[in-house]
Image (cartoon, rainbow, N blue to C red; front, side, top):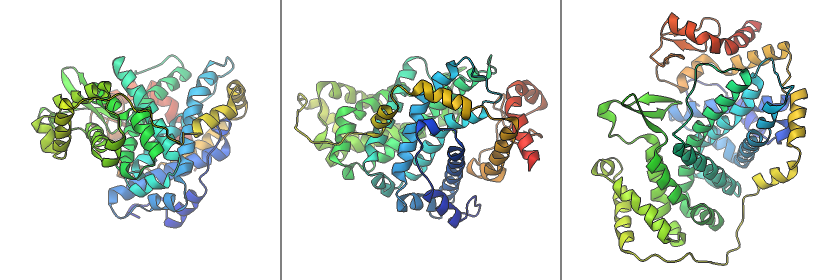
Length: 439
């Protein structure tokens, strides 16, 4: 592993071997919390390894022990919890937790898993080791990207506000903001799956090209570009978990997310296996030809391979379209979402009430213990290593040089911003500091 190690090789092996999927009812339980901590450690170590470019043992361990399908199932289980249980929980009249941090951890769990998958799916052997669950992962990515397009039509991602009326409303807003970042991670995961398009099963190809028509969805993403916006007359891109102003000299430079979309389109439209199975209907032709307006000389200079895509589109403009073929194909279908929904149908209210009584009503002592464990997990030297950019002020986003002396986790550019941010930060700062002192 790299020079800075969060986990020793033997520790990482033990954590990977112990990974398992939890049903929605057990989200937030003691065993689940322990696994969430383990996943965060594996996630941070995988990023450190990838940054150091000295081999990636976390990815190798996940493949060796066959744990990629486990991660996919856990990802979909927590997605279902957020859709089916979390809204019910927030509506319960007697749901008045002392601290929302334990619930936030469950909400954040999806982001942790998809971030780990984004890191390791860069390697083609990881996609192959997903086996049949790659179908479920394709469906998951499609759901996220469809929501991203729909959100763009409503005016873009939600804005983070300075304060909210209740802790639960704040938690709901944080979950909504997190959903945007998760969708962007899902885009990267999907692009890495398309890198393996020539070795995917026929069922997976059919799911991507016919059932979901991913090329047309990707065209819509390019049109809306939800990761870009104009703010105060300045172009901003969403990168590194926040909106960043793009300097005028950099505005012609291709953003990472735009690049992911173009590479995915290239893979889906030009690989022999995909071209043989994609039915170019009149609708698909009309959508794909929209790409010609984006293929400028500046873009081709940055991604020269797109010249082949330009040629394909020139040919497509002259080609006759055909109605969809109705081939008789025996294919697999994703089963994780449907199985979890079937097993828990009619139980969502009961699950929410069970978790209210037994999971999210922790005592002050339990909260301090949990805060202490998280302080040990999120070592500052590791966090700074995986995010080498200079820290930003938590209130105004300017470059920061001062850190909260109590919890050591938030940064500020000046005392004035720290005072203004305290009403929001104080809710997280106090339990974190108490847990640190408990050590």
